[in-house]
Length: 200
Image (cartoon, rainbow, N blue to C red; front, side):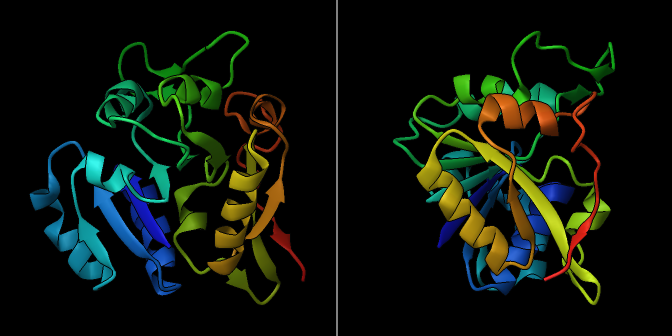
């Protein structure tokens, strides 16, 4: 599968490493331009390339992995989604004053993301895990790392589940974006920062 990342920080690099190890082609992008990612793609290997945000977002599945305060600007750089899958890995935390949790009222973070990416089929995932649990091989002697995900499009969730399982995680469907997103949301969701293994 052709996969892209909007953002090339810790989470994006960790996920990309798993994807290329499984044989997927990955285009990484950031706000500073593809020329700043040469070292990153070199470390990831020949299946990884650097591109613009628009080029990365043209992939069949796209991972959004930018700081919360940059979400609107990052998504504004995408001309149209046309039903492609957008995997939202973000948490509504900001380092910009006032730092901390961003209260969206009744909405979840991924509903906010979906409004800024009209036409995308949004799946929420990877936001409940600390980076140190994402980067290593998710397959352990005791079991596989649980990976919660949520979304409103059944086909998009099925595709994501296949990819997540393929790269070694144990995917668990938490429901639709609103209900599942609340369970997964930082700032009180019971699945946030829940790190557990599934015994197969």
